Length: 156
Image (cartoon, rainbow, N blue to C red; front, top):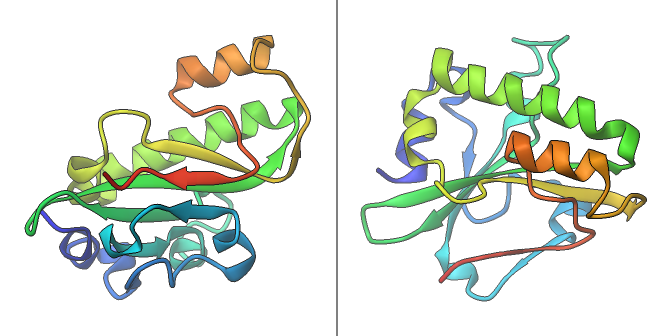
């Protein structure tokens, strides 16, 4: 399934697909890069799209589709957030919300979510804790990549 179709089949975000990285706010887009931009099939500003529906939820920021074949995309999910150790529980809550949203409202987006490390934390500033800290271990157990100040989207 293509990312665009998975978004279109999801009522909460049906009209929120954008080509390339256009759904990613410019300040956040500058924190992302990829080798081949033609492989980015589209993006979704999930936080903005569902803010009215879930105003008090710990919402995840973005979904990004990556072309794997002409008819099949994979999705990764990017959260741009301050990268302090005390934010780890909040990030885990955001991921729990995202997974529940997939199960309850977005099964097609869940199906195309990349199997290997699909949940990416991009630091909105400096990363202020270490990769070998207890907080980093909690992140890894939850399935969230250790935060990076710049994330290179794997498009090969």
